[in-house]
Image 1 (cartoon, rainbow, N blue to C red):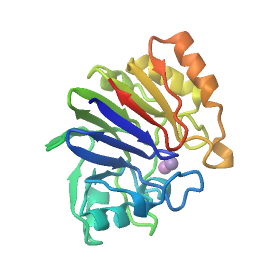
Image 2: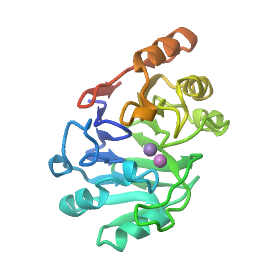
Image 3: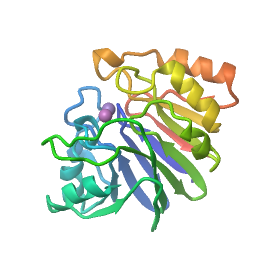
Length: 227
Ligand code: NI
Ligand code: MN
């Protein structure tokens, strides 16, 4: 039992719980570090944090083949619907109770243009509540004091970018942990490109020395189950 998170590289996680398989930011076929190809993914829902290619990734293919529902902001949901995919639009601060649990979109400071240049709305993170477990996927974002408010909801597992250059780096991600006060932190969005090479073990060590959170470093393909 518990909620199982499998890391597929970059910002992609498969979350299994509440009777559903939910994939977040499935950038697989374009990512040489991804341990699986899009055609191997079985998912009921696809969550997309923003329009950039390293997050939208293989969303349309996975959603079509699985008859999965895309959950994203209004602009990206509409973009997917226009390609024949089921989608449930949400927007920042809003949530919806799905059969597996609740998804709420959170603030992320970043960009969100779609690969064809169309407007992707505001980027987001996700607060996902499944079987009483709260998972926060930050998306691509800077450190923001809004994380204090997000943390007030009681985060069990926080998935945080540490790559720097495009998002928070390790130092700001450590400050984010102090605002969020999650029970577990899993770093993401590093090593995929030369400009985001990082040492996740050094980040994990700093988290465990300076906060009460447990840090879990997953290699692509590895899983973590909470609780
Ligand atoms: Ni991005
Ligand atoms: Mn990105």
